[in-house]
Length: 174
Image (cartoon, rainbow, N blue to C red; front, side, top):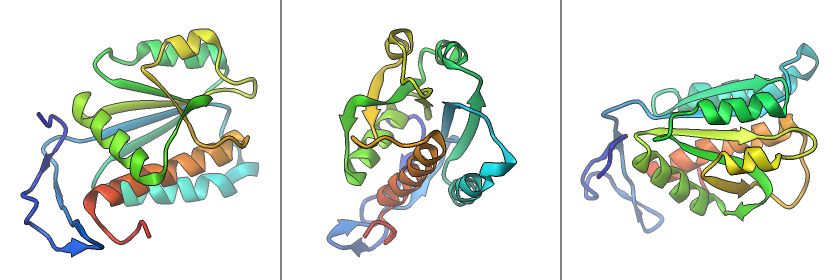
């Protein structure tokens, strides 16, 4: 059963590259909360500007909340404070890797099964502690490469936007 949203009939829309173009009719707001260790600084506004742009683009489809926490202990506290029914994903090099289509499928499935709420966590410079890893439902890897928190956040936000666009069947994902 779809709890966060309802898909209109597959025949509603046109085909796009062999796939059915679907339009989403939202019955409840979908929300992704992205929490990472670090802080927002004016010096690194170059990384926040595109994140804010993706948040605006996602606005009609998904509420993306981005926040920073001071350290790993605060991250674990944020993980544990998330409601049990909400799905919790941590970004970690040991996690499973997905292509864009796979990540879209994963995100949509998790939103469906968790009442439209997903929490995503990015650890500190030392990675995620064992306590952090045990506090989430799933580990996902962005890449085998190492990224700064700002770049990881930006790449992840773009992939969330792409996931929604893939699900809607738009031409964004080419």
